[in-house]
Length: 147
View 1: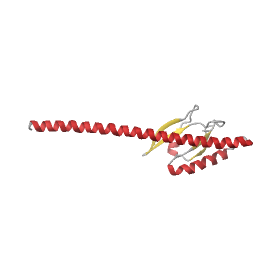
View 2: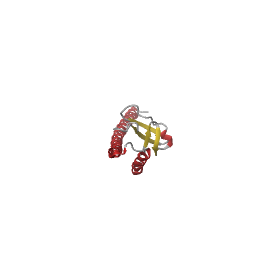
View 3: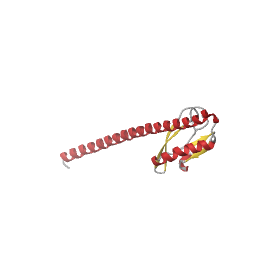
View 4: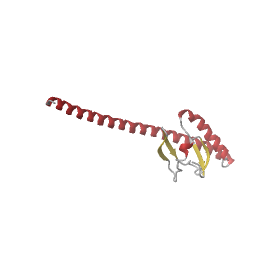
């Protein structure tokens, strides 16, 4: 093999390796950016849902009816779940570690942990070929035992 052929193959190998490294780094950065964007969007929806549920529950409390029944909680979350079903958003409502309502697939429901403090938990979970971004947190206001 002649020198120019060896030099060409050497430069070609360096170029291919450099190109692959650049493509890997670009795709990794793009993935992390998309994950951050989706996480921020999901957190916005989470806060919107929590605030809506709190407003509805507090409205019943202010009407003098006292604490709403579990059936009220279930019907309220069911209305949100019906709306968000089109967007592949699943909801679960627990009261003192007892599940009141859930439309989360069974294979994912077992991996959800309850928040232990007043903040939310964010976790990425893979089940089969599907990735789920899970956010769990307590209700604020007077219904802190509901999450």
